[in-house]
Each structure stands twice: as structure tokens, then as C-alpha cells.
Amino acid sequence: MKRYLSAIKPTGKLTLGNYIGAIKQFVTLMNDGDMILFVADLHSLTLPINPEELRNNSRNIVAYYLAAGLDPKKVHVFLQSEVHEHSELAIILQNYLYMGELSRMTQFKDKTQKMNNEAIGLGIFTYPVLMAADIVLYDTDYVPVGEDQVQHVEITRDLVHRFNKRYGDILKMPRALIRQSGARIMSLSDPIKKMSKSDPKGDIFLDDDLKTIHKKIMSAVTDMDCRVCYDETNKPGISNLMTIYSALTNKSFEEIEKEFQGKMYGEFKKEVAKVVVDEIACLQTKYQEILASGLVDKVLKEGKEYASTIAEKTLKRVQNAIGLYRYE
Ligand code: ATP
Ligand code: LTN
Image (cartoon, rainbow, N blue to C red; front, top):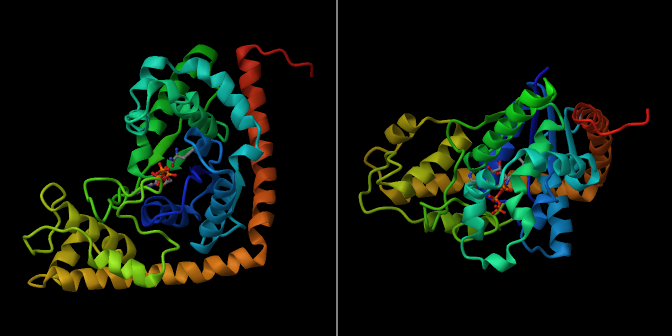
């Protein structure tokens, strides 16, 4: 059975980008194999975060996982910080990734671009090491993520290759899995920028009220051309709305172009707004029910037990392979 593993950082309120690029993909894959999902709370410490927000965000992500339709009988969900093997394995694996390659990572460069060198924490630099540990700890086959995370999976693959060449066939080689369309939802106010929860300009949040969502879509930045057709380079705004519409309706770009041929942008936006509002309304209702039910804590407890059993075995296998002394 194939194993899928993925995570979301509790750095802020979830966006439509997280939902389409990551969570919806998890739901589609849930019946295809063993699925392990976690809240990457240790990764969220790599940039300053308020403790109360971190705690709330973590809990809310789990509730949204479940509200989106992830079935806790099929999917194992836990908090990264509760399975100590993630940190222990990262300490070992940091010796197999190099300063040069880490300093070339896009996320590191983007997130530290405006920071003073003296104030850049080590964690944002070694971020890919912890992520590699997250992935290999579970003998993962596939890592379903949005496009921005593919580079992190690629560096994990380099590490696995390097490690196995030296010690034998110890770590499983993972592969990134990205949606054909919807792997990169852009900001509604600046459609050449990724919609991102820690930089909320032009974001739709899953907990926005429905009127606000409608308004945000109706005022999304588009071009002057007025034809609903997909052209990422010249029409990034309309292409982004088409991507959102396509991801939520399963209609292809050709079908959408036909549907809105000769129609004004306003008409198209109204339809996109309706589809997004309907989907989020349903999600919000389930989310509130789940938060009130106490299910989140139960799921996290079971998930932690399941994950710990696997993680413990992998860590021992690695420790053995590299020569760390074990009594038993
Ligand atoms: P941050 O702003 O803190 O970096 P983020 O909003 O980019 O956060 P992550 O926690 O880094 O979100 O990502 C969780 C998952 O959602 C990842 O698989 C990521 O690729 C995906 N994702 C995030 N933003 C988008 C987006 N705009 N479009 C598609 N997928 C996305
Ligand atoms: N870096 C990821 C979150 C993450 C992750 C992982 C995703 C941490 N560890 C392991 C997949 C597998 C992000 O979404 N920003």
C-alpha cells in the first residue's frame, strides 16, 4: 500500500490556496493508500509567532482537515511536535545537507530577503532538513503539496540518494505529487504573487464571512481585455479565477471558456463567487460542528500513537545504520 504524507504550517488562518492546493488533494487521495497528515508546528517557529495564535491555528487546521471531508478512520492526523522523532532525526540528517544548497532554496531567499542578516534565525535556514526528516520518517511514497513545496521534496530526494549511497538502502525515496491545475492559487489583488497565509494581501480566508468572500472575488484584479480565456502570462488575474473555478467545479479551461464566451468579466466573477461561497459555506458549517464536538483532540491522540510507532522504527533503523550505539 502506498503511503501519502503531508502537512500545513500553523502560521495563520488557512486560505483558499491551502484548501485547493493541499487539502482538497488530500481528500481525493484519501482512499488510495495510507495517509498521514500533520500540523507542522515546529516549522511555524521558524519566523516569529504569537504562542496563543500558534495553539489556535494548530487546532483549527485539524478541524478544517476534518471539515473538508478527511475521514479520521482512514487518515492519521497529529502534531509534529508531539512525535519527538521528527526533531531527533533532523539533528542527524542536518549532516547530510549542505550550506550551499540550503542557501539556494527559494523559500529561504524569499522569506529572508527583507531581513537583517543578524536577525535571521537558524531554523528558517535548516527548514528543509526538518521537512526531509518529516518525510523519510514514515517511509513516504508520495508527498501531495502545492507547487511552492516541490523544491523541498526535491532536496529530500537528494538527501535520500546521498544517505543511501553511503549506508545502503535505508531511506525510502519520496516523490512530490502536485495537482494538474490549482497547485498555485494567486493573490486576488496581485495575481503574480502566491496567495499566502502569512502575507494576506488579496487572500480569501476559509473563515471569512460569506459577503466578504463575494466582495473580494468581485473586486479581484483583472485585465482590460474582457475575454474569459486562459493565458497565465498576459491575463494572470482572469487565469487565476479560472483556476479557482476549475478546481471547485472540475470543469476544464476549455469548458469554462465556452461557457463564458461573449460574456463580461462581471458575469464570470459572479459565478466564481457563487461557487466559492457555496463551497466555503458548507465547509464553515462542518468546521463549527467539529470544533464543538471534541473530535479534534481525539483524532490528534490516535494520530500521535499511530505516527509514533512508525517513527520510532525508522529512527532506530537510521541510528543503527550510521553507527550510533544501542544497548538492546
Ligand atoms: P506561509 O504564508 O506561512 O508560508 P502558506 O499559506 O504558503 O504559508 P503553507 O503552510 O506553507 O501555506 O502550505 C500548506 C500547503 O498549502 C502546502 O502544500 C502548500 O504548497 C499549499 N499552498 C499554500 N499556498 C498555496 C497557494 N497559493 N496555492 C496552492 N497551494 C498552496
Ligand atoms: N513546508 C510545508 C509544510 C511541511 C510539509 C512537511 C509538507 C512541513 N513538513 C512534510 C509535506 C511534507 C509547507 O507547506 N510549507
